[in-house]
Amino acid sequence: MVPKPSSSLTPPSSTFKFPYNYNYYPPFWTLQPTVSTREAQFKQWSSFILSYCRHHLIWRLTLVDALNTPLFHNTKLRKRLTLLEAREILDWMTREEGAQRAEWIGKDGGKGSCWVYWRRPEEWAEALSSWVVQFILLEIRSGRANREFKVEETGQKNTVLTLYELTEGETSVSQGKLLQLGNRRPHNAHKAVEIHGMDPDILQKSLNVLVKRGKAQVFGSEDQQGVKFF
Image (tube, rainbow, N blue to C red):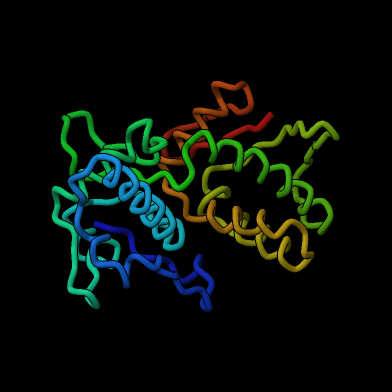
């Protein structure tokens, strides 16, 4: 089932802007037979899918459900993609030519649901690492720090956060608000909101990247995990 957008994460005034081709170019909804034309069409669809999922904080798609959403069904034009067409587009997104912006879920060879990587795990790893530094600095500056943080000028940090603090607590949202109020690097405020409510499987994939790079250590039981950032 396609996750519903969370009103607490998407600004109330925010409305998704559909691309021009979505509403005003009917051929957009018919996969073209010419290889070069279809390649360009796949790129347009990939860009649209990534933008749509990022705006609505959709991390995974179940195709049979997504077919009935505005993502693949344009009620104004009475146009929609078939299951096979949607699968073909997403399959292209999983390959190198599609920048590996999607990944099929499951090892049984089925293609019924997939991750949509508007940020790949490697990109989320960088965002998380940067976010932690900003979080610690803001906690110290605001005087709300209730633990000892250490952030060196080189960007090294030695602190422990629970996965709950990272994705489900007020930590990420409050950081976004502080960045917005202080008018400091507003793009980081957007990152903070994106991290809040992050899919736990995507979080684990991203943390695994940091662990392999020697920048983090994950510990604890499955339901009470924490992560130490270096």
